[in-house]
Length: 132
Image (tube, rainbow, N blue to C red; front, top):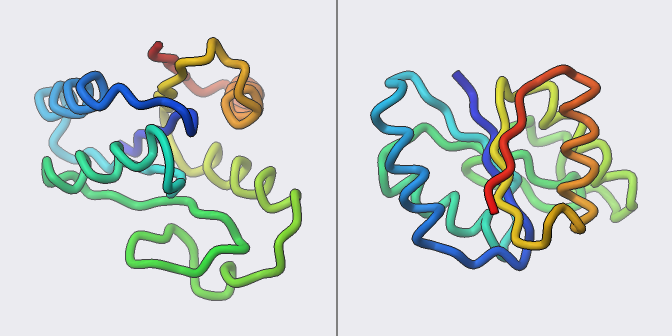
């Protein structure tokens, strides 16, 4: 099962993320964690703890960033010029790829990334859990 886990850039509750990731260990053995590859906030800790706990980890980083070891897509998708469209394309790919999503949000869904992801998951009729 592929679980998308991400959060806002201002989310800094490391203990809550670590505890959540540890709890996943008891629920499924074939779990794959899919992050968004942001450098700040929740995504930084999600990547750290996913790798620390031995989960299979991949990330749907933006098209204007370089491909890395954990990138979800092929090399041709990356190193494109910056455009705001890249964020919406990434969210669409992310929504289609994961089975369920967990969003760590400390701003009560005022973050544009969280709002668009929740909207996209609702359209795809996939389960979304928001953790404050």
